[in-house]
Image (cartoon, rainbow, N blue to C red; front, side, top):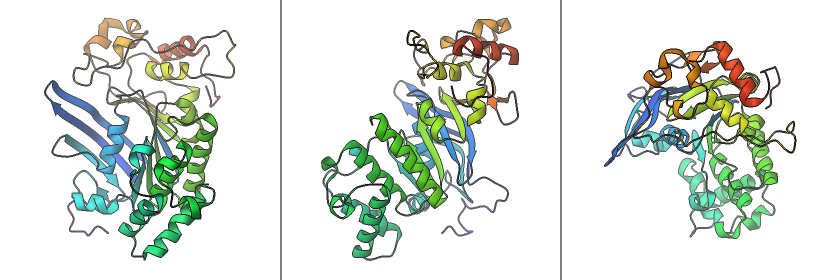
Length: 360
């Protein structure tokens, strides 16, 4: 536990369990500085799920790695605050972060095959994770490992516990990763693309498993994904990132019913929908994400936005929009379009007027 002499610990009241405040991460390279994350802010309560959505290169994974203390501070410039309960993880010592990682916070990585050690059995890896944070014998740790594998739905866990990662299917390996992340009952779980490369049936099982275990352990969950279909199943709130910035933040129902940012509209338009006819094509976002070394002037999404010419005085080319409340204090958007223009943009991009329905 953190003592009050730790400079990262400060008594705080009336705060969310996880508070990310103006988090920025930059990597110096020979070609220039990569501004991977730029003043990102959000908060999360226990028992709630936050989804961070965006294309590859938007800053999602770097944000999660910064929260977990997995970025080498000697190789990157990190600023802002990341409060986990009463501890600022940005100013905490490496030893303090290591003590909390795996115990108070844990992460499910995108590729379980590369995240699990190929030379060690599932049993050895789980037992080690348990004994790092718990004063128990190897036999007790093995019993806990088998119980957790059973909880995450692995058949014959007393036998599969001695398998090596390559002997397991993709879905099984992902379940082992979830078991490893949850074996010490962390208060915060970050899942980075937890259903990537899994078939649809296994995806649904993994998402349902995360929800079930969240209810059991009262965990705060952050889901990192590019798939808005996944978001609709699990999230309470959504943060949309582009070019290292938060461009929209809202509750799940409000985001799907009344999306505001043209980038969010593009992501929603790319999701297959049951109400489309067989002849309708999905509409991809034109162009490619920007280089984080050389971001465009003005709005970072402007080169790909089909609505920027509706903003007078060439403002999208000259100024960076702030993240402001629109249309409600709980719904934040970074866009110069007026409220009426954003409604019309949603009608054009999604083929409907925003209504109260919660799914695209």
